Picture 1 (tube, rainbow, N blue to C red):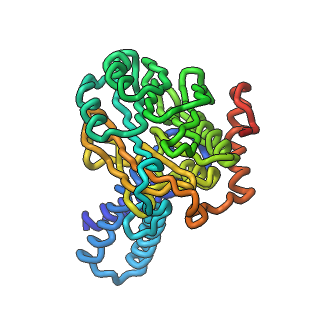
Picture 2 (cartoon, rainbow, N blue to C red):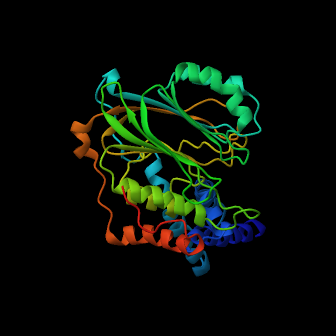
Picture 3 (cartoon, helix red, strand yellow):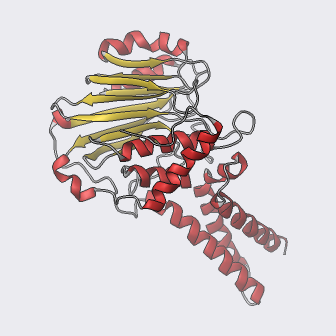
Length: 364
């Protein structure tokens, strides 16, 4: 009877935790329940199995409880199903071997206090990417890696900061029209540039690392959501291929990241391939995908891997893409509805009331 009461108590808790993130409020203690969604789904499934194995379902309360729990599990699974191998690819597989139209990207949140600089450099040398994005990089990190990386990567944008939001972007490929922006906060940088592939084809690159909702310093998710929607609306108006990457401090299936993907009309290479949980590298049970890379329809996926531990709290990601504009129509995302665009714009309008430097209309 104690087990039955425990399972029923867990079932009620699971339903509440599943529904909480649906509330349109930006408080951290609501948004945080987006993160362990896969874990909650697994626990709900175990609870259903245990209930069927251990107890006879013969009273109406039992039937009601099981129906509620199965409904909860179905809803939970629906949110993350796209990130299982059972779903079809959103960004399709590469079909060419042309090296001049192949792009290799390495991204890593290094953990500012981490001092294993050589471990990172060795991994970058092993992967030999064309573009390297390092986040949470302060001046110590810049001093430790710049000499080595600049010898291989002649193009760079550098914004080392001691507030865990520093960014170092290195490229072997030419970068032009480089900009370091501060979209929401003067101490939170983002980067953009036009990158030229060896073939001469160009694309626009965005690198972002918005702040997470935290009880001490940032109790609302408004800043994070605003930076994501600002980027999404700019990308929606794009006139050339685009890649957006970085540590979004948000999971792939959240309402905010889903809105970002629908608004920007970018593709998520993880859909149909897996979760690729990058955080927390130090906790096997509590991991979720915070590090993202989205592409426009001109790109296809050759390789997508989570790399080995670099003593950070994040695992790095390594991605190989091929530029195949002739087949872009085969995977072009649906145009966002007016309701989707209004939701994205409303996030900017809300922030505009708090910070008059944030524009409400984003141009190309």
